[in-house]
Image 1 (cartoon, rainbow, N blue to C red):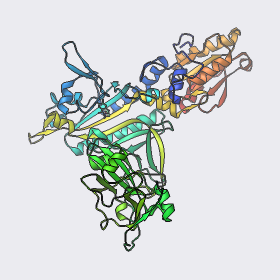
Image 2 (image 1 turned 120 degrees about the vertical axis):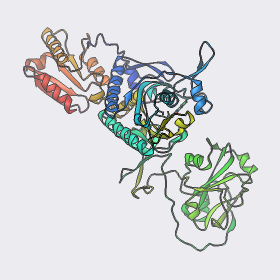
Image 3 (image 1 turned 180 degrees about the horizontal axis):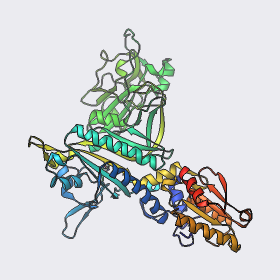
Image 4 (image 1 turned 135 degrees about the vertical axis):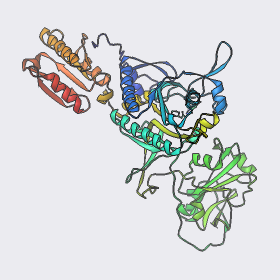
Length: 569
Ligand code: 9G3
């Protein structure tokens, strides 16, 4: 490819709205242009990267026995009404009407569509297991699209759906997809971790997210520094901590003037934080929820949502606390009227003795409170948020935290959709059974952005060679020097003929400009051809990732040498 012909409009300055490095670099390096919030056009360089990622996905999906299909983007509302999800999703679902005024949505995902597709034609156990996948644009009208392709409103997803006779079969399909994902992300040259994930609203339990580790990642993961345990922080389960036995002392009310936080109270009462209990109050569709955890722990909102069985929670306001007979800064589990508030205690709190907590009265706290004797909560559950240094739930090792970009997720759906939509098959006994399903997504465009987040430096992108838009850039440094320019053209032709994806920067620009653009776009190898090195019969090959420079004899088989260097990157 000749750079003078390549549509890759590079920018000198960083676009103002670009918040993360992948967005900045893709705009500056001429990989993409924004068409609307969260919607981008992929220019030739980006499209070549996406094609490589997709082909790695296709090879591994096909090798796993999955079959590629393509379903419509526009989905009839009836399918979502059958599954009961038409009214679950709000503005995030892009809805439209056709000329006959019939309702549709732009596909945010395809569980309903694929279940309706197969229920007509899969009737016998002999046809199972089956895994169908597609690679296609998805639409989700994010309230705040941001970070470029990392949280777009229109994005490319590979979504696969498995159908089995029973849960044992699903376990096999799930593991097959999990293993295929590890091969896909390994081949893309990414550093990632599969983490246990909260399967959230789509029902079914058992799911993993594949996280590319990067500081700009929106997801937070907790992982063990000793074993391979890793979990989305929202999901990380924690064992209860049993405090050492103590005889229960007499509960007493103490005046605690201007002690608004648990730290103030512990300082004032000269108590360690692990002998205190603090509260977090939420409001929900089921009313006020008072959550109690040990003073040095944090509440995990997702666990509260799952424990109480509400759709979502948000912070309660003071007047709700007053109405329930308590007040901010002085909340405690004792004496709360269960009709006025749901009391949720972390399981560790229930194993504490003689602790201090709010007295539900302005300016007062209680000391020597004991669970059972002094209060009985509505719920007792693990509602703790995993923290740095916590013992690993699997091996007791130290837990650390990292940020990650979710590039893939695998879910067990069981019969959630097949029951709702009557996708059944006849088993060996001729009995009608619902198919047992799984679904498996990869954010293709997000994977490209994640690769940049993980592989960049001050000069630009450093592409992993397997997904680089081109493998080699040939740079003639002085187009006034006929001999070296001719030699550069010869090298470009020889590499291209040998199947090496090559660009020649044939612009009438100073070498510095060419080198800057080369580093910005991030070709894995750069071959510099100039009169000086040619006089010594050499060409210079520089690796973008390591900066390593190799001088090759121009009279030698430089094509084979360059191919060998690419294979080692
Ligand atoms: C919607 C809208 C947004 C959504 C969904 C539905 C996320 C929705 C979850 C999934 C689960 C898996 C197959 C590929 C892998 C992920 N956001 N999800 O179902 F209507 Cl507006 O998409 N689907």
